[in-house]
Image (cartoon, rainbow, N blue to C red; front, side, top):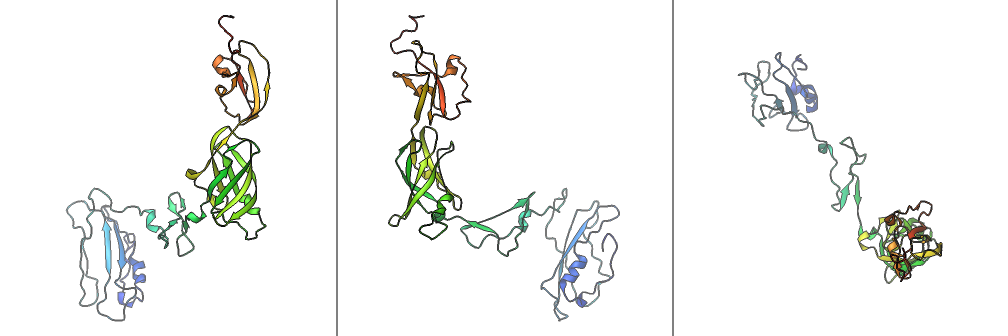
Length: 331
Protein backbone atom coordinates (compact mmCIF):
# COMPACT_ATOMS: atom_id res chain seq x y z
CA UNK A 1 0.00 0.00 0.00
CA UNK A 2 1.14 3.55 -0.77
CA UNK A 3 -0.28 6.53 1.10
CA UNK A 4 -2.86 4.29 2.73
CA UNK A 5 -4.21 2.86 -0.53
CA UNK A 6 -3.57 -0.86 -0.84
CA UNK A 7 -2.61 -2.48 -4.10
CA UNK A 8 -4.14 -5.63 -5.50
CA UNK A 9 -2.75 -8.99 -4.33
CA UNK A 10 0.79 -9.74 -5.54
CA UNK A 11 1.38 -13.29 -6.80
CA UNK A 12 5.01 -13.87 -5.80
CA UNK A 13 5.48 -17.11 -7.73
CA UNK A 14 4.48 -15.47 -11.02
CA UNK A 15 7.26 -12.89 -10.78
CA UNK A 16 10.45 -13.68 -12.71
CA UNK A 17 12.82 -11.52 -10.66
CA UNK A 18 12.78 -10.69 -6.98
CA UNK A 19 13.53 -7.03 -7.81
CA UNK A 20 10.04 -6.74 -9.29
CA UNK A 21 8.59 -7.57 -5.90
CA UNK A 22 11.05 -5.32 -4.12
CA UNK A 23 10.02 -2.41 -6.33
CA UNK A 24 6.40 -3.00 -5.41
CA UNK A 25 6.86 -3.02 -1.66
CA UNK A 26 10.07 -1.07 -0.94
CA UNK A 27 9.77 2.40 0.55
CA UNK A 28 6.14 1.79 1.47
CA UNK A 29 4.93 4.34 4.00
CA UNK A 30 1.67 3.96 5.93
CA UNK A 31 0.45 6.57 8.40
CA UNK A 32 -2.51 5.83 10.63
CA UNK A 33 -5.32 8.29 11.09
CA UNK A 34 -3.91 9.42 14.42
CA UNK A 35 -0.44 9.86 12.85
CA UNK A 36 1.15 7.61 15.44
CA UNK A 37 2.86 5.05 13.21
CA UNK A 38 5.15 5.27 10.19
CA UNK A 39 6.30 2.11 8.39
CA UNK A 40 9.05 1.61 5.83
CA UNK A 41 9.59 -1.78 4.19
CA UNK A 42 12.48 -3.38 2.31
CA UNK A 43 12.42 -6.77 0.60
CA UNK A 44 15.48 -9.02 0.47
CA UNK A 45 15.31 -12.54 -1.03
CA UNK A 46 17.81 -15.30 -0.23
CA UNK A 47 18.82 -15.57 -3.93
CA UNK A 48 19.02 -13.19 -6.86
CA UNK A 49 16.07 -14.64 -8.79
CA UNK A 50 13.07 -16.82 -8.16
CA UNK A 51 13.78 -20.51 -8.58
CA UNK A 52 11.63 -22.79 -10.73
CA UNK A 53 10.89 -24.92 -7.70
CA UNK A 54 7.73 -24.29 -5.73
CA UNK A 55 9.47 -25.36 -2.55
CA UNK A 56 11.91 -23.68 -0.18
CA UNK A 57 11.21 -20.24 -1.59
CA UNK A 58 11.56 -17.38 0.84
CA UNK A 59 12.11 -13.70 1.35
CA UNK A 60 12.10 -11.30 4.23
CA UNK A 61 10.89 -7.82 5.05
CA UNK A 62 12.55 -5.41 7.43
CA UNK A 63 10.10 -3.05 9.13
CA UNK A 64 11.35 0.08 10.85
CA UNK A 65 8.84 2.39 12.53
CA UNK A 66 8.33 4.77 15.38
CA UNK A 67 6.96 3.41 18.61
CA UNK A 68 3.16 3.91 18.66
CA UNK A 69 1.40 5.70 21.47
CA UNK A 70 -0.89 3.87 23.88
CA UNK A 71 -1.24 0.20 24.67
CA UNK A 72 -1.32 -1.10 21.10
CA UNK A 73 0.80 -3.91 19.62
CA UNK A 74 4.06 -2.89 17.98
CA UNK A 75 3.27 -4.97 14.91
CA UNK A 76 0.35 -7.08 13.67
CA UNK A 77 0.19 -9.43 10.69
CA UNK A 78 -3.02 -9.97 8.73
CA UNK A 79 -2.54 -13.27 6.88
CA UNK A 80 -6.15 -13.65 5.75
CA UNK A 81 -5.29 -12.78 2.13
CA UNK A 82 -2.19 -14.99 1.87
CA UNK A 83 -2.53 -17.85 -0.62
CA UNK A 84 -0.63 -21.11 -0.76
CA UNK A 85 0.19 -24.06 1.49
CA UNK A 86 2.90 -24.95 4.00
CA UNK A 87 4.08 -21.38 4.42
CA UNK A 88 5.39 -19.87 7.60
CA UNK A 89 5.66 -16.27 8.80
CA UNK A 90 8.11 -15.35 11.53
CA UNK A 91 8.41 -11.96 13.28
CA UNK A 92 11.72 -11.23 14.99
CA UNK A 93 12.85 -8.05 16.70
CA UNK A 94 16.21 -7.15 15.16
CA UNK A 95 16.84 -3.83 16.89
CA UNK A 96 15.05 -1.88 19.59
CA UNK A 97 15.20 1.84 19.15
CA UNK A 98 15.06 4.66 21.64
CA UNK A 99 11.33 5.23 22.39
CA UNK A 100 12.00 8.97 22.59
CA UNK A 101 13.90 9.24 19.32
CA UNK A 102 13.39 8.55 15.65
CA UNK A 103 15.31 5.53 14.33
CA UNK A 104 15.54 6.89 10.81
CA UNK A 105 18.89 8.67 10.46
CA UNK A 106 20.63 10.33 7.55
CA UNK A 107 22.93 8.02 5.67
CA UNK A 108 26.54 9.28 6.03
CA UNK A 109 28.19 10.27 2.75
CA UNK A 110 31.05 7.90 3.58
CA UNK A 111 28.70 4.98 2.84
CA UNK A 112 28.98 5.90 -0.86
CA UNK A 113 32.74 6.37 -0.78
CA UNK A 114 34.87 4.57 -3.33
CA UNK A 115 36.97 1.68 -1.98
CA UNK A 116 40.56 2.31 -1.02
CA UNK A 117 43.24 1.94 -3.72
CA UNK A 118 44.53 -1.56 -4.31
CA UNK A 119 48.07 -0.27 -3.82
CA UNK A 120 48.58 0.01 -0.04
CA UNK A 121 51.18 2.75 -0.55
CA UNK A 122 48.78 4.97 -2.52
CA UNK A 123 46.50 7.59 -0.99
CA UNK A 124 42.85 7.96 -1.97
CA UNK A 125 41.90 11.22 -3.73
CA UNK A 126 38.61 12.67 -2.49
CA UNK A 127 36.67 15.58 -3.97
CA UNK A 128 33.76 16.94 -1.94
CA UNK A 129 31.09 19.46 -2.77
CA UNK A 130 29.06 20.60 0.22
CA UNK A 131 30.11 17.44 2.01
CA UNK A 132 29.13 15.09 -0.84
CA UNK A 133 31.83 12.86 -2.26
CA UNK A 134 32.38 12.99 -6.01
CA UNK A 135 32.09 9.74 -7.96
CA UNK A 136 34.49 8.22 -10.48
CA UNK A 137 34.00 7.03 -14.05
CA UNK A 138 36.50 4.27 -13.42
CA UNK A 139 35.88 1.10 -11.45
CA UNK A 140 39.06 1.90 -9.51
CA UNK A 141 39.14 4.82 -7.08
CA UNK A 142 41.33 7.84 -7.94
CA UNK A 143 44.65 7.57 -6.11
CA UNK A 144 47.93 9.42 -5.68
CA UNK A 145 51.31 7.95 -4.73
CA UNK A 146 54.33 9.57 -3.10
CA UNK A 147 57.77 8.34 -4.17
CA UNK A 148 61.12 9.16 -2.63
CA UNK A 149 62.82 8.70 -6.00
CA UNK A 150 60.75 11.60 -7.40
CA UNK A 151 61.48 13.94 -4.48
CA UNK A 152 64.05 16.56 -5.63
CA UNK A 153 67.13 16.82 -3.41
CA UNK A 154 69.64 19.65 -3.20
CA UNK A 155 72.73 17.70 -2.14
CA UNK A 156 75.24 20.56 -1.80
CA UNK A 157 76.22 24.03 -3.03
CA UNK A 158 79.32 26.18 -3.27
CA UNK A 159 80.46 28.73 -2.31
CA UNK A 160 78.72 29.07 1.05
CA UNK A 161 79.15 32.88 1.10
CA UNK A 162 77.63 34.85 -1.80
CA UNK A 163 76.77 38.36 -2.96
CA UNK A 164 74.55 39.63 -5.74
CA UNK A 165 75.55 38.19 -9.15
CA UNK A 166 77.70 35.48 -7.53
CA UNK A 167 77.86 32.21 -9.43
CA UNK A 168 76.48 29.38 -7.28
CA UNK A 169 77.25 25.75 -8.13
CA UNK A 170 74.52 23.26 -7.19
CA UNK A 171 74.53 19.48 -6.98
CA UNK A 172 70.98 18.10 -7.23
CA UNK A 173 69.56 14.56 -7.21
CA UNK A 174 66.26 12.87 -8.11
CA UNK A 175 65.64 15.23 -11.03
CA UNK A 176 64.25 13.55 -14.12
CA UNK A 177 64.82 15.64 -17.28
CA UNK A 178 61.81 15.87 -19.56
CA UNK A 179 63.98 14.96 -22.55
CA UNK A 180 66.55 12.20 -23.07
CA UNK A 181 68.54 14.34 -25.50
CA UNK A 182 71.93 15.15 -23.96
CA UNK A 183 72.06 18.60 -25.58
CA UNK A 184 68.51 19.55 -24.53
CA UNK A 185 68.73 21.83 -21.48
CA UNK A 186 65.16 23.14 -21.62
CA UNK A 187 64.34 21.04 -18.51
CA UNK A 188 66.32 23.57 -16.46
CA UNK A 189 63.43 25.99 -16.95
CA UNK A 190 61.36 23.63 -14.82
CA UNK A 191 63.60 24.29 -11.78
CA UNK A 192 63.38 27.18 -9.33
CA UNK A 193 66.06 27.94 -6.73
CA UNK A 194 65.20 30.33 -3.88
CA UNK A 195 67.44 31.82 -1.19
CA UNK A 196 65.56 32.30 2.09
CA UNK A 197 61.89 33.16 2.45
CA UNK A 198 62.18 36.78 1.27
CA UNK A 199 61.76 36.12 -2.45
CA UNK A 200 65.43 36.16 -3.45
CA UNK A 201 66.38 33.67 -6.12
CA UNK A 202 69.25 32.12 -8.02
CA UNK A 203 68.28 32.31 -11.68
CA UNK A 204 69.77 31.63 -15.11
CA UNK A 205 70.40 27.95 -14.43
CA UNK A 206 72.95 26.58 -16.89
CA UNK A 207 75.86 24.23 -17.57
CA UNK A 208 74.26 20.95 -16.46
CA UNK A 209 76.58 17.96 -16.20
CA UNK A 210 75.76 14.45 -15.00
CA UNK A 211 77.96 12.84 -12.34
CA UNK A 212 77.17 9.16 -12.84
CA UNK A 213 79.29 8.01 -9.89
CA UNK A 214 77.33 10.14 -7.42
CA UNK A 215 74.02 10.06 -9.31
CA UNK A 216 73.64 13.86 -9.26
CA UNK A 217 73.34 16.75 -11.68
CA UNK A 218 75.81 19.62 -11.32
CA UNK A 219 74.68 23.03 -12.58
CA UNK A 220 75.22 26.74 -11.95
CA UNK A 221 72.99 29.74 -11.30
CA UNK A 222 73.37 33.48 -10.72
CA UNK A 223 72.46 34.98 -7.32
CA UNK A 224 69.88 37.76 -7.57
CA UNK A 225 69.36 40.68 -5.14
CA UNK A 226 68.30 39.47 -1.73
CA UNK A 227 68.57 40.08 1.99
CA UNK A 228 71.78 39.86 4.02
CA UNK A 229 72.13 37.00 6.47
CA UNK A 230 72.16 33.20 6.57
CA UNK A 231 69.40 31.53 4.56
CA UNK A 232 68.26 28.08 3.49
CA UNK A 233 68.44 27.40 -0.24
CA UNK A 234 65.38 25.56 -1.56
CA UNK A 235 64.83 23.71 -4.83
CA UNK A 236 61.45 23.27 -6.55
CA UNK A 237 60.56 21.38 -9.72
CA UNK A 238 57.33 22.38 -11.46
CA UNK A 239 56.83 18.75 -12.54
CA UNK A 240 58.02 16.89 -9.45
CA UNK A 241 57.39 19.29 -6.56
CA UNK A 242 59.52 20.64 -3.72
CA UNK A 243 62.72 19.31 -2.23
CA UNK A 244 62.80 18.43 1.46
CA UNK A 245 63.10 21.79 3.24
CA UNK A 246 64.53 20.14 6.37
CA UNK A 247 67.59 19.05 4.36
CA UNK A 248 68.12 22.40 2.60
CA UNK A 249 71.76 23.61 2.71
CA UNK A 250 72.56 27.08 4.08
CA UNK A 251 74.26 30.02 2.39
CA UNK A 252 75.39 33.37 3.79
CA UNK A 253 74.32 36.40 1.76
CA UNK A 254 76.69 39.33 2.26
CA UNK A 255 75.49 42.90 1.67
CA UNK A 256 77.13 45.21 -0.86
CA UNK A 257 77.37 48.99 -0.29
CA UNK A 258 77.17 51.23 -3.37
CA UNK A 259 77.08 54.71 -1.87
CA UNK A 260 76.68 56.79 1.33
CA UNK A 261 75.10 60.24 1.35
CA UNK A 262 76.02 62.61 2.81
CA UNK A 263 79.65 61.75 3.48
CA UNK A 264 80.24 64.55 6.03
CA UNK A 265 78.34 65.58 9.14
CA UNK A 266 78.25 66.87 12.69
CA UNK A 267 80.92 65.93 15.27
CA UNK A 268 78.07 65.26 17.69
CA UNK A 269 76.43 62.78 15.33
CA UNK A 270 72.73 62.68 14.59
CA UNK A 271 73.17 63.20 10.86
CA UNK A 272 70.64 61.22 8.78
CA UNK A 273 72.60 59.26 6.19
CA UNK A 274 71.35 57.21 3.27
CA UNK A 275 73.18 53.97 2.50
CA UNK A 276 72.42 52.40 -0.87
CA UNK A 277 73.43 48.88 -1.83
CA UNK A 278 72.29 45.30 -2.08
CA UNK A 279 71.14 42.97 0.70
CA UNK A 280 70.19 45.89 2.95
CA UNK A 281 66.45 45.22 3.18
CA UNK A 282 65.56 45.25 6.84
CA UNK A 283 69.20 45.64 7.79
CA UNK A 284 69.51 47.08 11.36
CA UNK A 285 71.44 50.33 11.86
CA UNK A 286 73.12 48.75 14.90
CA UNK A 287 75.15 46.65 12.44
CA UNK A 288 76.37 49.77 10.58
CA UNK A 289 79.40 51.31 12.32
CA UNK A 290 81.26 54.56 11.65
CA UNK A 291 84.71 54.66 13.22
CA UNK A 292 83.81 51.52 15.15
CA UNK A 293 80.69 53.05 16.75
CA UNK A 294 77.26 51.68 15.77
CA UNK A 295 74.72 53.95 14.10
CA UNK A 296 71.27 54.63 15.55
CA UNK A 297 67.75 54.01 14.25
CA UNK A 298 66.15 57.36 13.34
CA UNK A 299 62.88 56.48 15.10
CA UNK A 300 64.74 55.86 18.36
CA UNK A 301 65.84 59.53 18.34
CA UNK A 302 62.47 60.85 17.16
CA UNK A 303 63.75 61.69 13.68
CA UNK A 304 61.26 61.02 10.84
CA UNK A 305 62.64 58.79 8.09
CA UNK A 306 60.92 58.16 4.74
CA UNK A 307 62.11 54.74 3.59
CA UNK A 308 59.47 54.18 0.91
CA UNK A 309 61.60 55.83 -1.80
CA UNK A 310 64.53 53.51 -1.05
CA UNK A 311 62.67 50.24 -1.54
CA UNK A 312 64.93 47.24 -0.96
CA UNK A 313 68.08 49.02 -2.08
CA UNK A 314 68.93 51.14 0.96
CA UNK A 315 68.56 52.08 4.63
CA UNK A 316 68.46 55.32 6.64
CA UNK A 317 70.51 55.65 9.84
CA UNK A 318 71.70 58.34 12.26
CA UNK A 319 75.44 58.80 12.65
CA UNK A 320 76.99 58.36 16.09
CA UNK A 321 79.20 61.09 17.64
CA UNK A 322 82.83 61.21 16.59
CA UNK A 323 84.86 58.77 18.64
CA UNK A 324 86.31 60.70 21.62
CA UNK A 325 83.91 63.63 21.21
CA UNK A 326 82.13 64.43 24.51
CA UNK A 327 78.60 65.43 23.63
CA UNK A 328 77.72 66.56 27.18
CA UNK A 329 80.83 68.76 27.43
CA UNK A 330 80.00 70.48 24.16
CA UNK A 331 76.35 71.18 24.85
